Length: 109
Image (cartoon, rainbow, N blue to C red; front, top):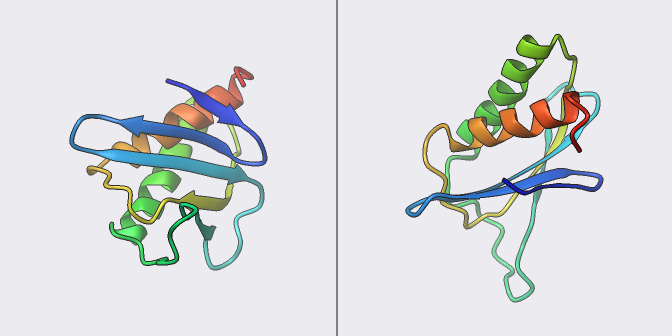
């Protein structure tokens, strides 16, 4: 798994019939939930998300919460970047968010 570090921690996860980029910026979670930023390809102008965005956010938060529980961490999700035409399967974003949060809390990235 290739996790990249910048302002956001990103990991693309492809499993044959599904594909998702999980991109998280840790910080203080805003009162209305994480900020959602849509990443568009250079030739795209359509910003409509093709998957269930609410479920995606819930999965990302659940993955980070699970990592916090296991490590005693306190990471919060300030923002999530999404690729509007990704096609994740159920629990895929949670799994990747968990892996990212674990790597951050263990100082692996």
